[in-house]
Length: 317
Ligand code: GLU
Image (cartoon, rainbow, N blue to C red; front, side, top):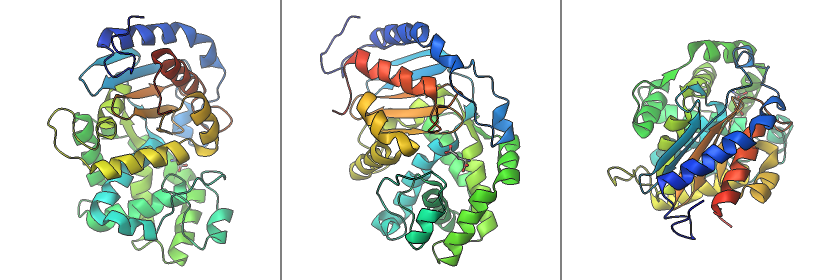
């Protein structure tokens, strides 16, 4: 691979493309190993053979492989973007209602929430995401539509949509989420109507986006909070840094340590098999492979990201 700059920051489109081409060959045996999420019936139908990756550099470089234009359910990756919205609306007041520590527990743990008196450990476990969504709704007259609009704006794609079937499927099977939301309400940490918060949460999880969309949408996090095209502030540099820090410490369910060890970048995964990774000051990388490992992260996706950061010689460490 021709490297134009040992820091990785100056690697050209062609360099990233050749790395992705190499990963596409290497990753094939991994695609059959994971298990597609079945607890949301609409997700269980997605073929395990799907694989895609897209890389967007803050210098304008773009590279992609596989089904990178095919929309998939972003699920928990949406939590990164609702967090950004809530911070924009509430600033540091948000942190009175949600913590910033890794949970070390299942993403939908009720036990921990009980011990901690209704203050979720972080914004990326389900309880934390419900609080964040409640905050967003409190400030957005358009309700859940505001979340979709934000994603369309950031990804520069007006066709991004709520997958109604996934949202319905989530609602029908979402007893655990409902329990968490009611528990938060009982503790006074959910201000809005429980059903409205759940409805918005299920819809944000159902947002269908491609790897191209996701990598574009996250680019402000690699660019100090600014839109790469216009230079406008999406969020402040400090908030971008903090969102990246939370992705690094809380973004991969109960496998953040291993992910930091092997991949070494802030990232957020979802049970739809997507992962969005950020290399601050350099690029975003989105990967999609629906087969999950035991922690609920895309099995081939994690492997592909490990190959990527290793091959380009770039991580946050
Ligand atoms: N809709 C999912 C749930 O709350 C999100 C899961 C995820 O991607 O972590 O169960």
